[in-house]
Length: 126
Image (cartoon, rainbow, N blue to C red; front, top):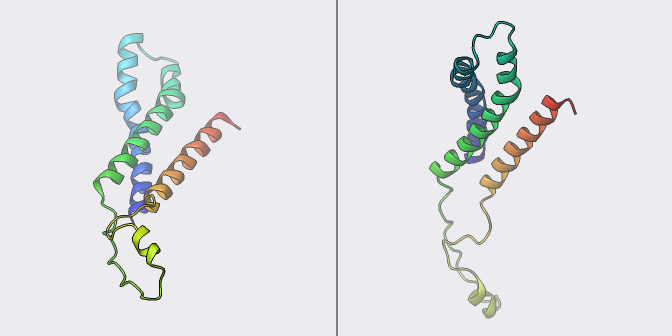
């Protein structure tokens, strides 16, 4: 669930960043450059500033959601089996620690990066 929430949050962040580029960036550029009579500034915002802000806000939302949501708690430790190797029980990490990376974080990060790369390839026509 954490990965799905992070992916959806990143998509929402990208949409908000693209719209935010027009709401914030376009008026600032028009104020500095002058009136936009032929639509060139709007097109520039649509193909340069908009995608850049979408990528930045998607990554920010991804990190925020992964930081604000907590991974599942530790699983209860299994009872030691008397037929097991005694050295294996000594080398096993203590209960409540997870030596492996969080798979939810990895899945969400890979999917969002793949979406960003696919979107940039689509925008560049490649």
